[in-house]
Image 1 (cartoon, rainbow, N blue to C red):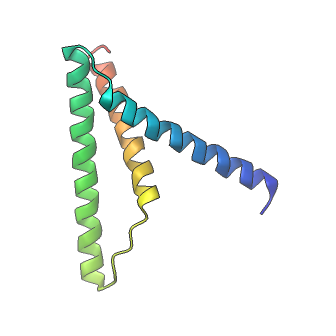
Image 2 (cartoon, helix red, strand yellow; image 1 turned 60 degrees about the horizontal axis):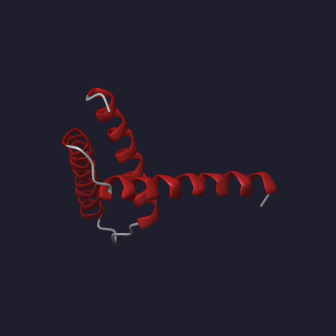
Image 3 (spheres, one colour; image 1 turned 45 degrees about the vertical axis):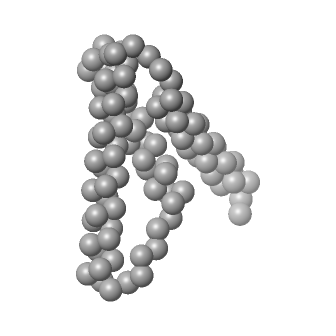
Length: 96
């Protein structure tokens, strides 16, 4: 594998690691009521997206009669991206 590809993938993986840590820290950090509402809305939107995606994945696997194969690292990274985007949206919407 070329060195450039390894560096790119390493930076990509590091970025996702930072997003995952950011997600956990913002969920655990106490704050005022406005901050709690922002985190609550972002968390509920992420949960809704996660459940919806998993329902569609299960339905697809049942229809195609294939075994369910889930890559949890990819799922975690997608959830972190959704959470980060929704958190930024609600912070901007509610003046955070």
